[in-house]
Length: 215
Image (tube, rainbow, N blue to C red):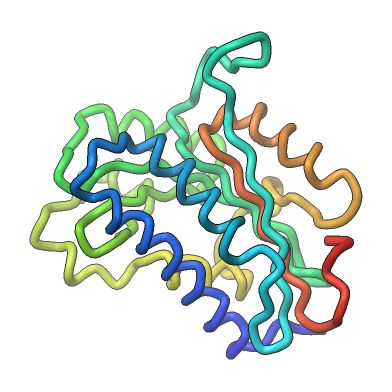
């Protein structure tokens, strides 16, 4: 079955709502970007896993990179999040995210973006602000079109727009897809290690049907 536009719209808006709620809550706190990305991943799992939107069921699992101990990954490529999206019967895709506070212009950001782009064109920068998240494509950062505070209100790119494009199969990288079904957790862990990302999120969508437990 095909995921309808109405289903894509409501799922995308739910995705945006959860993310923006977490970001707004932590805007005046001392939370670091990578910590906030982890909180976003957990919030998506806690609030959307098992939910239905116009008949479409969501299954969301997350995994964080260990920061110490035997399993710790020693070298990051500069990626805070990996997000995989699987729509049953249609496609499996993924994309990379580097996150920054809107008020914190990091001179290392273009280099971090280039490391993501060396892996995939499906790379984005999420700027955390007082009103939520605004997004720029990584290549635009490389081109020098950096964010400024006054742009926050005017950017059309936000998590709902990005997720809507991914669900419509207009964005995302097929080579980074995490298929739903058995061993999904193991595949997500493998992708986390491969990308050396701080947080990995797998979102599986079943357009229609009653049982989403096998996703």
